[in-house]
Amino acid sequence: MSKLPHVGTTIFTVMSQLAAEHNAINLSQGFPNFPVDPNLLELYRSKLGENVHQYAPMSGLPSLLTQISELIEASYQRRLSPSEEILVCAGATQGIFTTIMALIDKRDEVVILDPSYDCYEPSIVLAGGIPVRVQLNADFLPDWNAIERAISEQTRMIIINNPHNPSGTIWAKSDMDALERLVLKFPNLLVLSDEVYEFITFEEKHISVHSYPSLHERSITVSSFGKTFHITGWKMGYLTAPNSLMIEIKKVHQFNVFSVNSVAQAVLADYLPTIDVHVLGKFYQDKRDLFASLMSTSRFKLLPCDGTYFQTAKYSAISTESDVEFCTRLTTEFGVAAIPISVFNGDGSDQHVIRFCFAKDADTIQQAAKKLCAI
Ligand code: PMP
Ligand code: GLN
Image (cartoon, rainbow, N blue to C red):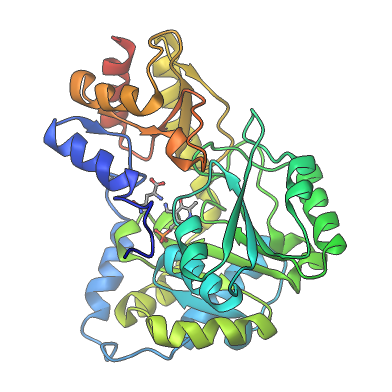
């Protein structure tokens, strides 16, 4: 008996393993390959000698909770109570799982927008809820008519992801306004807003749920230090929720992990006031532009990328294979690993689009683009 009969190994593990076996450049799983800020490492080394090695308080070190509330206030002009409305998590993944476990009851419906990040659906299923998958439109933006058709009195939550993995799109103000109207129309509906790429945006900033006061009482936001500080392996993130929901989320959190890595929390509490997260957009925009300019002579057609560190591309000028077959061959024959988008669609529909991660040093981007341009 399996609680998740349709779930296998994640595409990120599968493609990273294939890349390693074939010695391919790994632009599949999303993680940076350049060094972490030396100041962060130095802080870590010096923290190790301090008294930071026993359990942190259940919801997070007070100093880190305060720094997170200041970051949110500086970024979105929203003031949150560090003790009541913020929770430090072992990465966004745990924040999402814990939120769904706490707030989704048996047979509650949860709307997710395809292509959707892979941890949403299994978390809903494990909570006994019913995932309702609605396809984004051809530009990977919300189709509000389809979303509204999918929502009923049984719908407890909609999960949104903005900036969007895998497509790199950002919602327009009209999309956020449509979300607001939806929440006002359905009083039972909660919003789980996955904003892990909130600081990786380019020409335009994304509009956070934090900037919509009418959504605050019914929204949970999730953030990841892994993305913001190039430390995906630390598995550190946080969520915010109004106190009434946070009480329930913390009930699950205390038995799910109890509390999160104490050393990492102490280090991040000291690091946060020293950095400006708003330089991250320019940093990744340069990488996006380098990859795009090198790829301009290739037969791939790059799609718009407004945020995240992912570049999507169509390959119809090269092959009619499925995206999974094409990504496999790209890795094994051409030496570059990418992610097929169809695995994020509930019905497996294949738009013949693949995703490259450009969170890589210039040398890696150049070598990968050279191989891709030769195809
Ligand atoms: N949501 C999205 C959209 C992601 O891309 C990721 C990871 N890359 C996560 C959640 C999970 O973040 P974390 O690594 O902090 O668990
Ligand atoms: N979020 C990363 C990506 O989209 C992968 C994280 C993971 O491997 N679980 O590539």
